[in-house]
Image (tube, rainbow, N blue to C red; front, side, top):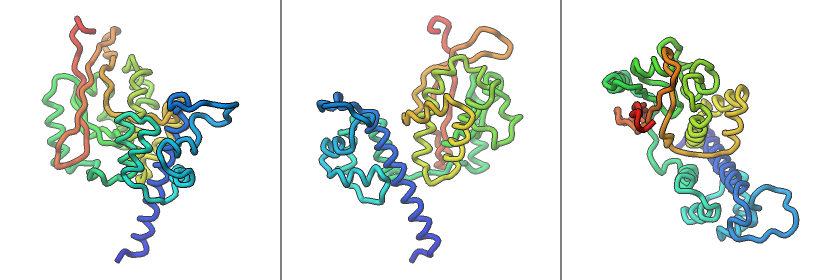
Length: 279
């Protein structure tokens, strides 16, 4: 039998997850125009995108039921309902996967974000083996390991305290770090959706909400990208970096993949120089 505290924690987590799911459904609904789903518009519409009753009609559910889902009420939705909503809202494969994850966060077993000391040593040895910038982050984008090339081309991560060694925060709060990334404007258009995805998937972790709130206070660009509610994967393909000793930027191909270190949920990122003929 669960203790009172355990029961309270479960209710709180369920409420947070339901609210996150509702907010995501609303953001997708407001982005979709009636013409895109074959609906004719009569008169002036006061609300952006589709109406709740239109989504309900397209998905084959009642308006009340869909309204409760969007309001974040604790109602039970079947997989068929979630798939119907994904089709009605014309979600991309990535958006559909994100919706399924929000509906059932235990669809895939979650792993820890911070490796053990042994795991960190293994990760450090891995990035040190590369002659180009390489680093490892967790889903908070905390830097867990990096090589000397990453420190040279991006910033001296070792000079920072661990709580300031957060990639998403450095992008918007560290001018020197930002200046190294020549194509910063396009780079953050991928970085923010990735971070937003992790925030949703860790809705019960207050760290993410606090980090996002702090970035919204200091950066209008982050706020604009955050409010678009895009989600994504690590699919930015190229980054332009300016070396501190040269004036001409250098192009790097970005390669990112999940690493296996004692089952931890961490990601390795490698910046491979682009050949002159391709840049």
